[in-house]
Length: 152
Image: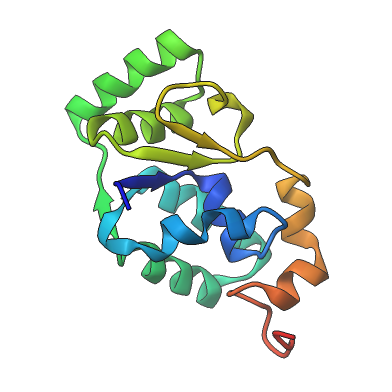
């Protein structure tokens, strides 16, 4: 597979077994070709801490860290600012998209802000991410299920 970057919405679908989660399995499982922007680790960690706790968050960070983790440096920050200006993207989205563009990687996402941009593999959302984070069905079946729940 070609190089890939998965944005925060894709990681959350994967970790919480959202209905769109299977769309991201090819990218998140091919860690040799996966680039993870540090801002994605922050966004995923923030949501998992709120909904699943510290141990689950540590596991998610460990999984994301199996890939190449790309830090935000001065040059990437400048590239992201240009992306934000040109495409009217929020800060985190701009950093994630600029990271993908820097490495000529495909950005895998379900975030509508990226729909139609070059180099993006977009999957429309089928449910709100917040609803997935609170859903017992998602928690019971995701790779980071709440303790004591079956993975059936």
